[in-house]
Structures are given as structure tokens and as C-alpha cells.
Image 1 (tube, helix red, strand yellow):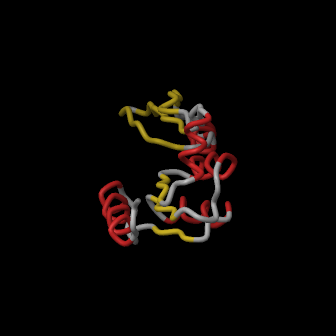
Image 2 (tube, helix red, strand yellow):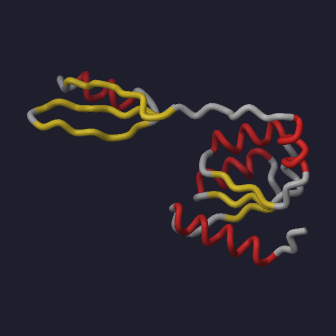
Length: 126
């Protein structure tokens, strides 16, 4: 889960954080902090057909470690090439047992897409 904090101290600021540590630290220092849930990471429901498709995937992409964990619980990690948005998701893939992991040197959506295209061009997709 990611949290979005609104901090009130003369000016209003907003920033993203994934834990309550920053909220607690700022509150302890006298800032008025209002937490707003920006998004929640929940696993998608999979049908039997989704599981079959996943079992045969040659390339899978991950934008977060939580997505890696969900995949690893539901589908093979030894055969598909994992293409990650950055190093943090790549580390999660390694911990989950993926054998072939790729990610751009500089994380980001554009560089991630470029890496996906490079991988797809390098394999035979049949």
C-alpha cells in the first residue's frame, strides 16, 4: 500500500510514502499530517484461462515487487523472461527464483518499455 501524505506547516505539501515512518516523524515534530491512501496494491483475480496463459508466457513484465510476489505464487518463475521497471523489482524477481531477469539501467516507464521491446525482438514469439 502506498500512502500520500499532506503536510500542513504554513504551506501545504504532498508527497508519497509507503510506510507510516514519515508520517510519525513529521507528527512528532509538530507538523499537522493528513494521510490519504493514493493506491492499494491488491492481486488481480485470475481465471483458469489466465493461469493457463501465464503458465505458457515467454515474457512477463513487473512494475513492483508486490506484482512479482503474486506471479510467483501463481505461475512458473523458471521459464519466462522477467522484464522489470527497475532494480527493486529485479531484486524481487531474483528472490522469487526467476532465472532470466532484465531491467533498464535507469528505471522508468519509457526505459522499461524499451527493454520489453528489446527482449521481444530477441526471442521468437510463436
